[in-house]
Image (tube, rainbow, N blue to C red; front, side, top):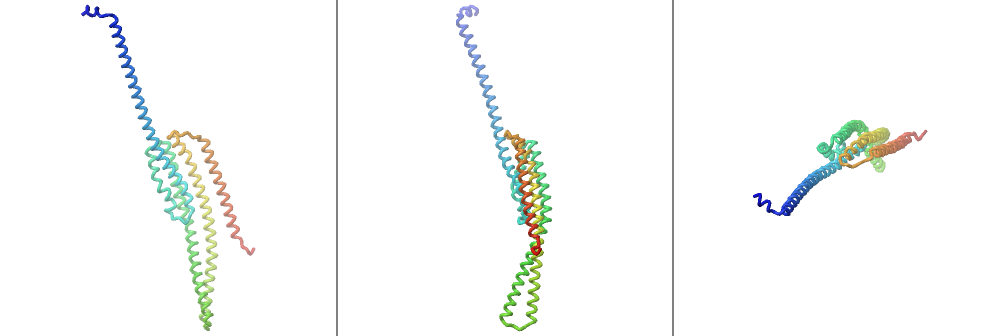
Length: 282
């Protein structure tokens, strides 16, 4: 065996060694390539999972943002006494269910900011419903007086027609004529008294409604101040940078302008009420 090995040319061993190292190089290259492919596959898998998560979060957060916006908007509905209580918050109640989904996918920071908002909003709703019920009594009383005005006015007009008919017929019944005159005077006086009472109640209701409207705006501004922390938490989750200081300054400037506008509106309305209460005879 040794003789056979010695008989093998040296060049053969060189070729064999070269083939061995070439094969080893190919094996190492393939192994490295497999490792890179495995790492790339894992990275792609994680990237796609993150993209799916971000896409889901965006859908949920956009829907939740719409619900939050409606929650603030409906605060203004409380001052509209032509709307039924259920209709006041209906736009928000129809969309608020999506907020529960945030608790499933949101970070602790986002959930905490959202809870602060919803808890404050609920407390404001309860307070406004209580104040709204108190002012609504003024509206009901005013409307009842208006109904009396319409009733007495119809009766007065009916009595006036009877008086006209009585005169056209040339009737000579002093007693009947006296009754007609008495009825007409009573109904006319009732209309006049009810008109005066209705005016007082209308003014009282309008003033209370105006004060309540300003209160609604103030509550709206109060709950709006809870939006920046919530928005910043959401944008942080979605990897959307935001200049927190600049955004907060913009929000504060908007609230300040709104306060000035409401104060000016209230002042002008109060001036109108004061002018309408001046006695023309003075």
